[in-house]
Image 1 (tube, one colour):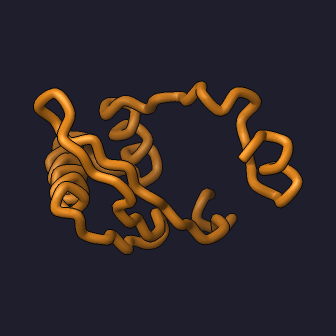
Image 2 (cartoon, helix red, strand yellow):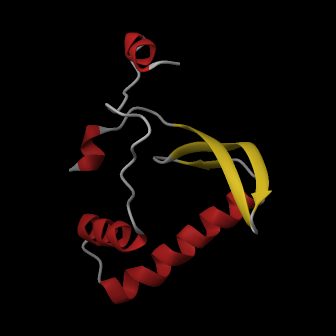
Image 3 (spheres, one colour):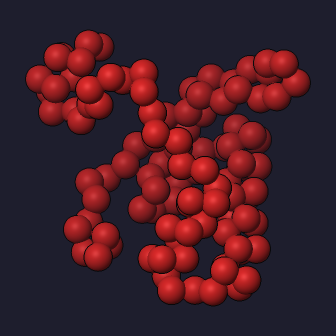
Length: 101
Protein backbone atom coordinates (compact mmCIF):
# COMPACT_ATOMS: atom_id res chain seq x y z
CA UNK A 1 0.00 0.00 0.00
CA UNK A 2 1.42 3.36 -0.96
CA UNK A 3 1.49 6.42 1.24
CA UNK A 4 -1.18 8.10 -0.91
CA UNK A 5 -3.52 5.08 -0.93
CA UNK A 6 -3.17 4.69 2.84
CA UNK A 7 -4.19 8.31 3.35
CA UNK A 8 -7.10 7.88 0.93
CA UNK A 9 -8.69 5.27 3.20
CA UNK A 10 -8.00 7.26 6.37
CA UNK A 11 -4.86 5.57 7.74
CA UNK A 12 -2.35 7.75 9.55
CA UNK A 13 1.05 7.66 7.92
CA UNK A 14 4.35 9.32 8.66
CA UNK A 15 6.00 11.41 5.94
CA UNK A 16 8.64 8.69 5.51
CA UNK A 17 7.28 5.26 6.52
CA UNK A 18 10.81 3.85 6.88
CA UNK A 19 11.72 6.30 9.66
CA UNK A 20 10.56 5.32 13.13
CA UNK A 21 11.22 7.05 16.43
CA UNK A 22 12.54 4.51 18.89
CA UNK A 23 11.53 4.84 22.53
CA UNK A 24 14.23 3.31 24.72
CA UNK A 25 13.35 1.49 27.95
CA UNK A 26 14.63 4.35 30.12
CA UNK A 27 12.37 6.84 28.28
CA UNK A 28 9.46 4.42 28.45
CA UNK A 29 9.86 4.04 32.22
CA UNK A 30 10.09 7.83 32.61
CA UNK A 31 6.82 8.20 30.69
CA UNK A 32 5.08 5.65 32.93
CA UNK A 33 6.40 7.38 36.05
CA UNK A 34 5.19 10.76 34.79
CA UNK A 35 1.76 9.34 33.95
CA UNK A 36 1.30 7.59 37.30
CA UNK A 37 3.26 9.69 39.77
CA UNK A 38 4.81 6.49 41.13
CA UNK A 39 8.32 6.33 42.58
CA UNK A 40 11.03 4.91 40.33
CA UNK A 41 12.20 2.41 42.99
CA UNK A 42 8.69 1.00 43.37
CA UNK A 43 7.55 1.09 39.75
CA UNK A 44 10.67 -0.03 37.87
CA UNK A 45 10.56 -3.73 38.92
CA UNK A 46 6.86 -3.87 38.07
CA UNK A 47 7.38 -2.26 34.66
CA UNK A 48 10.31 -4.55 33.87
CA UNK A 49 8.33 -7.66 34.90
CA UNK A 50 5.44 -6.49 32.72
CA UNK A 51 7.71 -6.01 29.71
CA UNK A 52 9.28 -9.44 30.31
CA UNK A 53 5.85 -11.09 30.39
CA UNK A 54 4.81 -9.29 27.19
CA UNK A 55 7.94 -10.58 25.49
CA UNK A 56 7.43 -14.12 26.78
CA UNK A 57 3.79 -14.27 25.66
CA UNK A 58 4.72 -13.04 22.17
CA UNK A 59 7.73 -15.40 21.95
CA UNK A 60 5.41 -18.31 22.73
CA UNK A 61 3.25 -17.31 19.76
CA UNK A 62 0.22 -16.44 21.86
CA UNK A 63 -2.21 -13.69 20.95
CA UNK A 64 -2.06 -10.84 23.42
CA UNK A 65 -5.27 -8.91 24.19
CA UNK A 66 -4.44 -6.04 26.53
CA UNK A 67 -6.58 -2.91 26.33
CA UNK A 68 -5.72 -0.09 25.79
CA UNK A 69 -2.63 -1.41 23.96
CA UNK A 70 -4.79 -3.56 21.73
CA UNK A 71 -4.76 -7.08 20.35
CA UNK A 72 -1.40 -8.35 19.12
CA UNK A 73 -1.31 -11.47 16.96
CA UNK A 74 1.78 -13.15 15.56
CA UNK A 75 1.91 -13.01 11.75
CA UNK A 76 5.39 -14.37 11.12
CA UNK A 77 8.06 -15.84 13.31
CA UNK A 78 11.59 -16.90 12.41
CA UNK A 79 14.92 -17.39 14.11
CA UNK A 80 17.65 -15.12 12.79
CA UNK A 81 21.25 -14.88 14.02
CA UNK A 82 20.54 -16.36 17.42
CA UNK A 83 17.40 -14.34 18.17
CA UNK A 84 13.73 -14.46 17.36
CA UNK A 85 12.32 -12.12 14.73
CA UNK A 86 8.60 -11.76 15.36
CA UNK A 87 6.28 -9.88 13.06
CA UNK A 88 2.99 -9.10 14.68
CA UNK A 89 -0.25 -7.42 13.81
CA UNK A 90 -1.54 -4.94 16.38
CA UNK A 91 -5.18 -3.93 16.24
CA UNK A 92 -6.08 -0.90 18.32
CA UNK A 93 -9.29 0.92 19.05
CA UNK A 94 -9.30 4.70 18.67
CA UNK A 95 -7.68 6.38 21.67
CA UNK A 96 -9.95 7.63 24.41
CA UNK A 97 -9.08 11.32 24.91
CA UNK A 98 -9.82 10.99 28.65
CA UNK A 99 -6.98 8.49 29.10
CA UNK A 100 -4.36 10.87 27.73
CA UNK A 101 -4.89 13.60 30.32
